[in-house]
Each structure stands twice: as C-alpha cells, then as structure tokens.
Amino acid sequence: MQIVFAPVVPIWLLVLLLPLLLLAVYAALPRWPARILASCGVLVCLLLLLNPARLREERAAVPDTLLLLRDTTLSNQLGERPAATEAAIAAVKQWAAAQNIEVREQSLTGSERAGVTPETSAVVVVGDGHHLEALAASGVPVSVLLTDDPARPDAAPRLLEAPGFGLVGQAPTVRIFLNEPETLRVVSAAGAKTQTLTAGEHSLTLPPLVAGANVFYLQQDVLPGEVIANNNAFSFVINGVRERLKVLLVSGFPHPGTRVWRDVLLRDPAVDLVHFTILRRPESVDAARRDELSLIPFPVDELFGARLRNFDIVILDQYNQRGLLADAYLYNIADFSKNGGALLLVTGAEFSGSASLAASPLAAVLPLRPLQGAAVPQQLMRAGDMALAQPPLKLTARGAIPAALNNMSISVYTADEQQIIAVEDAKKPSGRVAHINSGGLWQSGRIPAEQQQYYALLQRLTQWLLRYPGTESSPARLTLSPEGLVASGVTLWTPSGSEAIEGGTITRVTPPPGVYAVTTSDGIVSSAVNWTDAKETNSIEIDIKAVEAVTDETGGTVKIMPQIVTDLPHSPRRHTRLLGQQQQAVLPPLLAACLGLSFFLLSWIVSLPQRRLR
Image 1 (cartoon, rainbow, N blue to C red):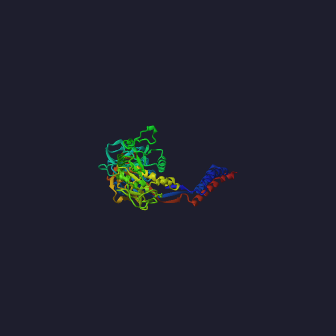
Image 2 (cartoon, one colour):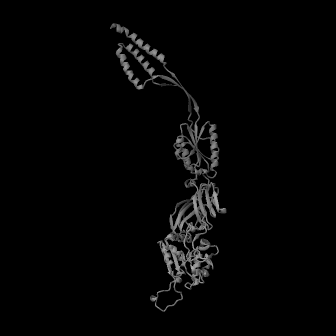
Image 3 (tube, rainbow, N blue to C red):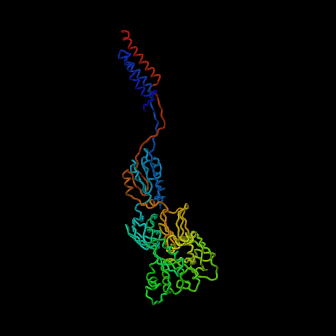
C-alpha cells in the first residue's frame, strides 16, 4: 500500500496560497491559540485540494526468462550441426520447463545484448561458438551449447598471397597455409597434380601459365574423422600475358594480301613478326658477288631448323611446292605443330594443283583436302559451334576451291555446303591447325563494310590456335542460376572430391556451400565459383578458448552436444506482475470540510474575549 496524490488544482498554486493564507490568518487573529486553530483549518483545506488516496496493488509472481539464441549462420548449417542444434534446443526447453523458467527464442546475429531484458536470468547460445562478443556484457550468465566437437579435425587451406599477372610459360609462385598435413591437389591448365605437404605456410610453385585467365583450383583431401569438408578447397585466377608473340609468316609469292597480313599482325605492338617470300631455290648458284645480287639466299636452315621452335605461330600464306623449301623443312613444320606449335594455312587456287601442300609432308596435319569439279562458293556462313564462330560473319569467299574435311577436323565456316575455314582441334601436347580455304579472303580487309568482321575473325582464330582460355570448341562451364549450380563439362570438382559429369550436364538445386570447379576433357579447369559466402564457409572451426572467455566472464558454462543438459547457471530475478489497482481516499471531502470549518469556528470562539476587551 502507498499514498498517492491527485491535486485538484496545480501544485504551484497551492504552494503560492499557503504562505498567503497563513499571513492572512496571522493578521486577522490577535491571539496565538486562535491563529494556530485557523492555520490548522487552512492546512486541512489545502490537504483536501491535494486529494490524497491510499493505493492498493494486486501482484502475482512472474517466472524468470531464459534467452535462447539459435545460431542460424551458414557455418552452423553444415554437417551434423543442424541436427545437433535441434536436439540441444529441445533439451534446453525441457530443462527450463522443469525450473519454471520461460524461454524466449531468437536468432543469433552477433548483436544480441539488446535482447537481454530485466526479467532475463540467463542466456543460452546453441551453435558453433561464433558471434559471442556482444554477449560478454549481458550481466547474466551466458552458457554455450556447442553443436560440434572442437577437437574434430578440419582441413582449411587458405591462400595467403598470389600474383595477379604472370608471363606465359613461366611458373608462378603463391603462398598458402595448411592447418592440417595432408595431400593437396592442384587443378589448373596443366591438369591435376597432387603433392603431400605438412601443416604450416608453404611457397607453392604452380604449373606454367597459358595466355589469358588461368583458373587454379586447390583441393585438400578429406582428413580421417573430418565431417565437414566444405572449406577444403579454394580457387584463384592469375592472368597470363605474353611478353612477345613471335610469328613466322611465309608467303608463296608476292601479292597484295601480304600487306593486309602485315597490317593485321603489326597492329599489336607485342607481336614480333618475321615475314619473307622465298623466290629462289636453296641450290641456286650465282657467280656474281653477294652485294650485287637482288635476291640473296635466305637462312632457311637456321630458320626452319633450330630456331623454328622459338615461334608461337607459323603462317603459310598461299605457299605451294615449287622446290623452294625442301621436304625436310616441311617435316619440321609438321613436327612443330605436333609438338604444340600453332599452324595457320591460307590457300587459294594453288591448293588444287599438283604442287599442293596436300601432297606434301604437311598433309598429315591439314584439316582439308582438295576436291575436283565442284562449284566455287561465294559467301561465308556459320557452321558448327566453335567459340571462334561466334557471332556469324558475312564475308565474300574469293578464290576458294572445293575441299573436304580430313580426319577429325571441324568445319567452322562453310558456303554453299563447301568448306571455307576448317580447324584441327588436336589435344595437348599437339598444337592446333587452322586452314583458310580462300586465297582472296584478304580483300575483306580492304572493304570498309567487311573490314571489322575480317579483323575479328583473324583475332579469334589466332586466339583459338594459341589456346586462349574460353576458345575451346566445347568449353566446360560452371554457372549459378536461381535453380542452383549448373555444370557442363567432363569432371565436376567439389570440396570433398570429384565426380564425372554424366550426360554432359549436372544440376545441383541446393548444393552444399563451398568452392566448385569444372574441367574439360584435357583436364583443364575452365571455371570455378563459390556457391555461398566465402567468409562463412571458411570459418567453420570452433575456437574453444574464445567461447570459454565469454562464459567464464559471465559465469556461464560450455557443453558439447550431445551432452545431457542437467543444469544451466542462471540468476533468479523474482519479478512480479501487476494484476490490478484500488484507490481509497485518505480524507473524505465531507469530513475534511467539516474538520476545516470546526478549526475556523474554534479559532473564532477563542478570539472572542480579546475582541470584547477592545
């Protein structure tokens, strides 16, 4: 019970009236007994204006509240942790019901101090022990039920440092960290390679770079007893750049197209071009002095012998067998292609003659063979799904002859069902070969309407010959869509291993979190994606020391599920809930009025003798 006031008039007015009324009483009454009685009447009136009342409250005991925080972060959704979370929450609720403690459940997001109310007697966190920093100042015991064993092994390789660029053909070095010793598998443009490493920091030498974006996928084997392997792999990209592109251009005879070739190749300042036209036989003997010759012997032995492998690509422009190059040199060019070199042939009418390259040692690597008696096509049209055939081009096919595909060649462009451009998509270590069956195609480089498409065709063709990433005929793809993860290729690499892609495509509607990669038939990793947040996926280990620091500071405890929950520290609050209130006036108004009038009447009676004496 307590006394409350509900003044009829403002308090400030009562405070102002009190001294004024007392002064008036002092001045009006001559004797102190009368003054005292009148002052009591004034006080009774003022008390009546204050309207005091007795307040009675009806309350009931309220049980303490337990704040139950469910860890809904990604790291707690892996492996057996979801099942352990549900079991732990059920155990906490059962214990709280036995202790007459109400449970208020929330999701753990890392800022839960605001969820602690005065009725909260304890906080229980069910999860993997992350995001507990904000609970250290809760003022109540914080207990943590871990959904995984901190002692369980977890392989979590990490990339510490890697260059963004590197020269083609050179092997870059990266720094990685392994928290557990195990076999590490490196999947790259050179295929898959494994090596056994110890725990700690390592400088890892990667396979040589190829031109363009080099995707590296590093995967650590699943450890014995390891349940969660989502963070066992990671990927990164190093761009391969060529210091110089070395091109050997051999023309069969002088013609205006050679100028177009030079313009195309020399547009890139990083291209080193060696171009010559052979017009004299190697066995030619001249009696004149060397400084008087207009056609000097060319060093074909040196160029097509020891130095041939120094070039990245060899272009034979309308060359035929007229005895200018010995068969031994043509054999060297064929071997150059078989050993990884890029070869591009441009032929015209001479390809159907008796001196055709189709009858030379190069015949084994040519994508086309000549035919007789067919019509000459007029327009280039798209055929096939080669990456270099996108988008379709419309160029005039001048000087083309009828030809058919050889062996496993692919027709890239045709016109009127005739082969105009064909390629030989040889697997490594053999190089690629392309054949342009149009001796007058160069004229498109002089026509403004076709010039841009002509340059685009040569650029894509050159990139394909040099095996730039993304130019394969059937490149492996790994894409993310609203439906999930879609992989097309030969092999899908997952953090826990690899699996063959049946039917050419794999779709994972809800794949486990982690980094995935896909490889081609050559074993080259084409692309890699991270299905979910990399930070959450990689941070799945449990730091038991950090968890114990929070529980020790707040007076809580740590339990590793599936331990039995028999007792959890809590601070009883003993709060009550208001059920209702009753108010009763301390001084009824009628009684107060009568009492006040009585005091005023008595003061008047006491002052009468004094008035008579006057």
